[in-house]
Length: 271
Image 1: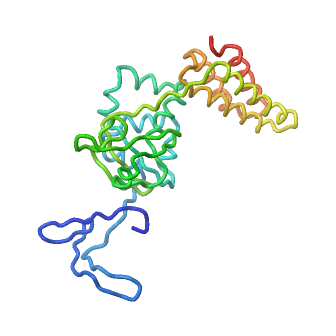
Image 2: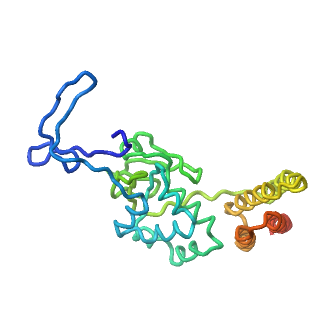
Image 3: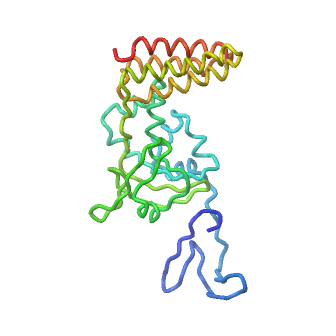
């Protein structure tokens, strides 16, 4: 429809229905189109993605993860977004302790990356997804969409329900959590990233733009934390620095805190 949502058309008891309305007259021609008469008003979905998932009652873990990752605003915003939503049972299939570990504050970036791997910009309905065969996610990676054994799949997950409308997007339910391929960076490239950040940030700081400098350092530390070959200890330390800076109101202190984190990472990367 013009508002982006889908109206489902079906035949029931010999009558054509559009959502909950029955078509009572068809093909009335006019100068600028055609009219089909229905016997009730069709109301669009009014709940956002988060509210729709909450009402469904089977996405508690997904919603808790979105809250821990700071992504609730995205699910309640204007969108539109397409979410491949793992059920609670899907999360339960992960190795024991995985969910509890991901929900820890120090793993926020990793959790956010996993969740963004389940979200595609725009409103993508199932037949469009199958026709495209792949979709680029908010995480940056692509998911493959296929039909195997008569079942539609996204990566390793089966699509168990599709095209659930929300005011700001559409939900497709899947039976497994999709894990993005781990990004990797060697120690030498990690150090070059830090060197580039300092080369860009230091002049900003020296010219009085402390907030802009802090943003450069923050972006680099956040990017480093996403690489799978960073040691868990160093990743936790960088996460602590980032969280400390986020809770500091003074841009000058933010810049110094983050610079110290970069210096520590530079000295310890690869160890």
